[in-house]
Image 1 (cartoon, one colour):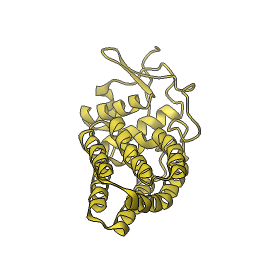
Image 2 (tube, rainbow, N blue to C red; image 1 turned 180 degrees about the horizontal axis):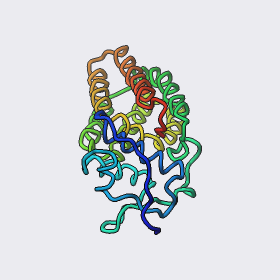
Image 3 (cartoon, one colour; image 1 turned 90 degrees about the vertical axis):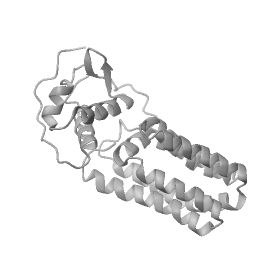
Image 4 (cartoon, rainbow, N blue to C red; image 1 turned 45 degrees about the vertical axis):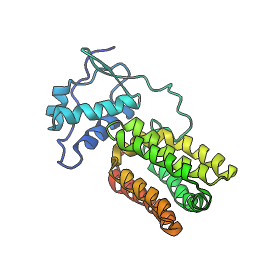
Length: 243
């Protein structure tokens, strides 16, 4: 570990999405190499003054970066930049590689938007009561883990992957498992950026639509859910580095 980082220039933040603004700004510094491996970040109090936000906001942003493997929190000793240069990136979709490449994840989401609508139609025709119960259990996991980005992200992906399995089509399941692996690398960032509100709303509506017997509505909800995700990513990034 090296000495604390020197003075860095930050602009105080607006009131909207303070936690995410802190997260994005800190991540930009880390991925740009401005803060080096082993370097100690300014203290929590110093970051609060720099950004003009509360300790709760700073702590949440730092914890999110720790989940991604960018920071190491040494309790009582401070927060340090991790050496993430050798992390197994599992291809170019890993969030550590996604510098100014938001279009990559949007491309995958656009593919999902098209494929999942048809996939959901097959799932609707071939589902049984056990499938509905399984979706309910996954939804319960999502609902109960809204304060845990990693757990929520895993449950979110499990929900869509299970619908793929409901199609009873081995090709769909195989292809979706590959996409699922790609998305798992970036989903933490997506949930961190957009929050859980949309996901909770749409996944509840999708289950209820399966139950209601309205195939077209179920297909449309899946497509709309992904479309909203794409649109919000584009709006939220606003030229900033997100992944």
